[in-house]
Image (cartoon, one colour):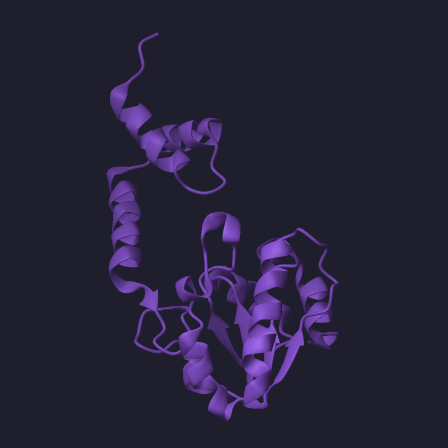
Length: 194
């Protein structure tokens, strides 16, 4: 059977998303065919809305629709939890174990991928240290996350700010976004100073 170009093109777009394989992408494309015209319009509008309205918080680097995210606007900045990606903020928020603010690096150090400190959102973190009492490094417990944590600890300690690392309740090599709320809560509660 000859491939239908429009279905293949849509499946190709879906498969470009992280975690979506070719079979799943094709199922998504077929599901779109079954949608009503109004549902397709709503889907397209939601995509455009996200692309046009979501930006990075000017303070922490998390996702927001305004200039400053709700967390930065409403919480004390005495404790700053440093994470690699905005999705990690959501994972920690679900645990309910942290009431401070966040700082999103938008990656971790990785010599293999040519990601250096200059590629990360570190300079704005340093500017935020004047009000902070503690910085909690909550990067993934993998090689890149550990290297980033050690680098940040060495960089921040001379400012007289306590630097701690989330406890290793999360298995080595796993990612924060997939950890359950209880495990994340325990990891934050049992963090250790670096």
